[in-house]
Length: 341
Image 1 (tube, rainbow, N blue to C red):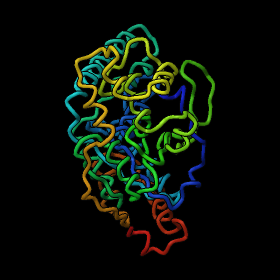
Image 2: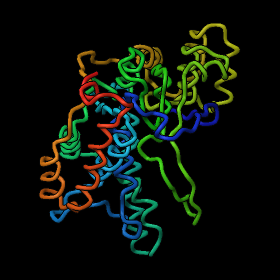
Image 3: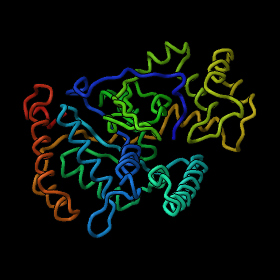
């Protein structure tokens, strides 16, 4: 979900080759949810499954899309969510209600011959088993992954601020509120897309946003950007009734002190707004991470994807060839340099 900044903030579209040799920390939950939502049968709405009935959409997306990144010479690292802050509870409960409502409408659409896929996308659930298998696959591919103490997106932003990665990647603009200097959207879902409800296709490309340029264009500071997002509403607070992006920008630019905004407006919830601000300003993160990319375990990946989950061996062999080639040619580095930071 994240904060809605699309009316104020616009990134620069790029090709993957622009990111060759770059280290990118990727919000794992955000990315895997995209795979679970998109990789479905368009007629039945069912996700991809193996013969045992286990969902494998997340594994398909993770393997093939990550292979695209590696083939382009990119060094991806995935960061998984830890314990969410207490003030995110309401958002989590609302998401559960949305899923339950979507499941009901999906069932009705199946019975009436309606657009099942439309509602099926909103029913995606990420289970503990899916997370475990995603980590297993990444390990076999030689891709580093980390467990954040709290929000994965926040950990990615801090890693970028510390200079350990060149970019953080997510679909949500929250990365900017967490202070990521260089942020990428659409990294794992780029490609030819169909417009909802219309037989029209368009090309979705990755887009890069630099926080210094965003702040300069809006004419505000990072602290003001955080408050602007909070006024609109984030995953951690509802916001102020009747305040949209343009009005929020006007408020933060006209107020001389942020405390006047935080303490002077009628926030529509019981959440401590100062706690939310501090969470964005100084999010919990784990500094004990190591970035090391290794050669893929070809036999291990084949056993995992083909023997355990019924993927096509021919397709797996082809994608692994691409992964191996991507490692070798990454940014004209020697093989030894590629596997170490």
